[in-house]
Length: 459
Image (cartoon, rainbow, N blue to C red; front, side, top):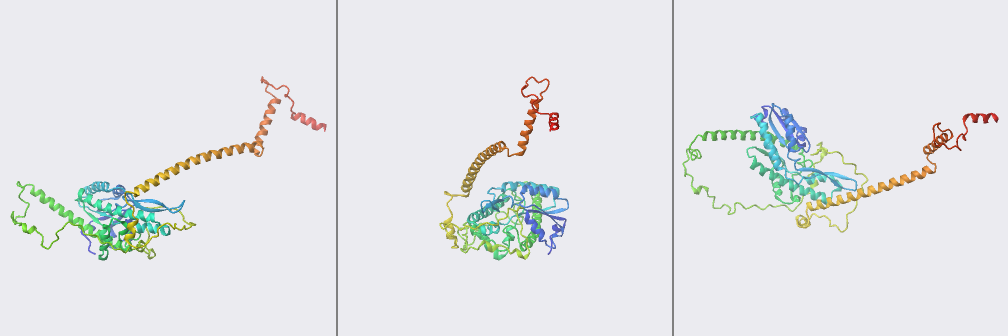
C-alpha cells in the first residue's frame, strides 16, 4: 500500500475512546509502525483534548481523533428483578454539539500553532446500534421497555450526528472532518441500508450484519477498513490544506488590485460572455428539483440478534465505557407475561405503528418524570418507616435489658451489684474519722478479718 508522504513525516497519534483500542488490537502491519495509541472508554471531548495535550510531542506530525461518542451516550441500570439490574446504554438526551464545536476549534488552533505543517484528522462517529448492544446484554431478560429505549436512543444519535455536521459546516468550515459512516456503509450492498436512517423510527434502521461486533465497536474486518480510511483521510486533509494555502495566497495578491471588478473572472473570459441559456437545465429535467425523495423502507424486519458477531472466532468483546460487574443473576425465576398483554408479532411496520402512543398522551419525558416522582415518594416513606422501626427496636432492647439485669441473669451486672454493696457496707462499717453523717447503729457491726480468725480458733 502506497502511503501518503504526510503519514511518514513523523509519528502518528491516534486518540479517542475504546474504538481506538480495537484498532490497536487489529493493527495494520504497514501503517501502524509509527503510530502511538491513547484511549479512554467513553471519554468526553474536553477530557480527550487534555489527553492529547499530555501525550503530544513534536514528533507527532499527524493527529487522528476518534471521539464524540461519549458526549452523547451514557450508562444506565435497567432493572430485571427486585434487587438485580443490568447496565445498558442510552442517549443522554442533550445537545453536546455546541460544546464539541467550541472544543474542536480551540484544540485545532492550539495544535496547529505548535506545528503549522501538522495534519489533524477529526472523525465523526458512525451510527450506533443500541438495539444490538443492549439486547446482547439483556439476553433472556429483554423486554419491550429496553427495546423502546434502544430505538429512541438510536434516533437521537442519528439526529445528533446530523446536527453536529451542520454546525461544523457553519461554525468551523475550514476544519476538515471525515465521516466513519463511509466505512460502516462502504460496501455497495450496504449502501442501500443507509437510506433506512431517514426514518423517524429506530425500528426501521438497518445496520450491516456482522460489521459492528457488539453494536458499538468495529469488528476485525471493519477495523482493517478503518485503517485504510484513516490512511486515505490524512492525504485528503493534507491536500485540502495545500489548496486553502494557495487560495489564501491568491486572495492576498488580489488585494493589491484597486478595482473589485477585476480578478473575479479569468482573463480569457470576458464579462457577459456567459449566456443565460448556459444556466438553463435540460428540457427533460425534473420540474421539482427540490422535492424530497420518498424513502422506501422494506416491510421485512431483520431481528437484531442476527447482527451479532460470533465471538468464538477469537474477537474480544469490548465495552465502550469501562464497567464493573453488576452482579450475578442466578436463581432468578421466569415469570409469564399477563394474558391481557398483546403478544408481539412480526407483522411488519403496520403493527408497530399502532402501538406507538401519541405525543400528546405519553412521552419518555412524562414517563421518566412520573417514575422519578414515584421513586422519591417511596424513598421518603421508607426512610420514615425505618426511623420509627429503629426507635421501637431500641426501646425493646432497653426494656429487655433492664428486665434481664433485674433478674440477675447478667453476670457482669451481678458482680457490679455485689461490689457496690460491699463497698457501701464497708463505708458504713468504718466511716472516715472526719465524716459528719454517720449511721451509728451500723458502725462496727460487720465482722473484720481479726474477728473471723478468733471465731475460727474457737471452733
